[in-house]
Length: 213
Image (cartoon, rainbow, N blue to C red; front, side):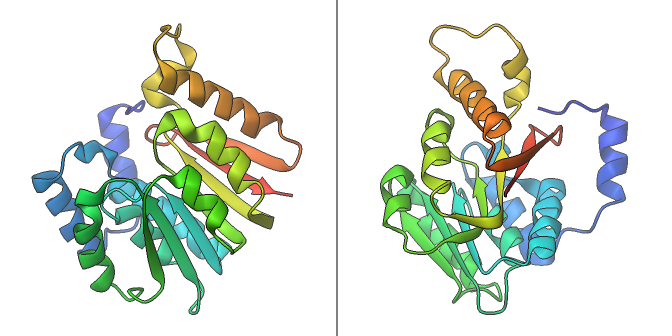
């Protein structure tokens, strides 16, 4: 997942913005109490999500894959003062943890939690979005692509996480590896769709930035 030498990675983190106190607490609690803490965006990628959101200054944000709420809080930092962030996750066990940290943030009244299958929830949302962040189950990435393209505004941005998938995207694909197959299809869709301008960044496990023309 980390493609840079550790000393370079450490230098990059040291010379990037500090992790806010609330997110430090969430980072710590996630690593102590929640399964698969490597799914957390974490300090460095969280600061990248934050600054991208601040540059975009979105009115409406959609996040597919809440986990413990860390990335949602990072994205909310750049949201307009009257903006709304919709975040979707299928894990019922994490809802209370997410809500506790959302309620402790300045955006407690602007974050809408959705519990359930994102492929069913996305079509039910009425808003169009200025910023979409996809970091959920990989086999459904191509479906999410089709669904969000109907809801992303011109000039809107799609951020896609884990697009390098620990390097598996450039290795022979095993027959039963549905996640890698889906990511290969998803990456192709982003790169070839003429409605988008796309740049893939080798940040952590790969982050793609796509702008709707």
